Amino acid sequence: MAVHKELTEDGVRSRVVGIPSWHLFERQPSECRDKVFLGGVPILAIEAGVSPGWRPYVGPQVGVVVVDRFGASARGEVVMREYGLSSENVRQGALDLLGRGNEGGRR
Image (cartoon, rainbow, N blue to C red; front, side, top):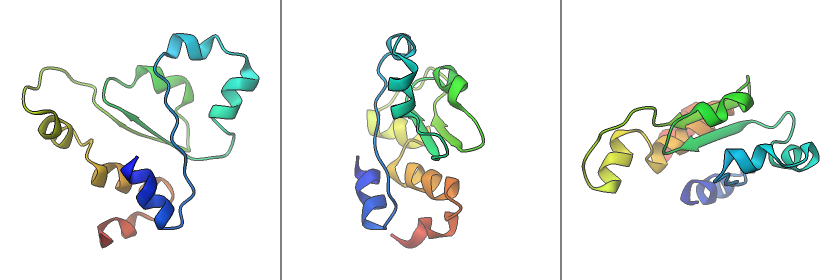
């Protein structure tokens, strides 16, 4: 949510969508799913789990910041940072996806 706020302040339109259950999401009518994943809109998937749930949606306009490994042991914020799930890395991923990658270090 902090990255969403920063992007908004930078003039980047964004929205946050949560999909806690791929199984339930897939059972929704396509009209509902299409409102979540808008055609032609870049998507940055952020997953503190594994990426297979995103595979059906990964395409040329989808970036992924995920953890596809298991077994780290440390405080939550340390593990998230070491796995690349820091707000700085997520923000940079969004800017890279939009072709604005050189703006990431300005904060």
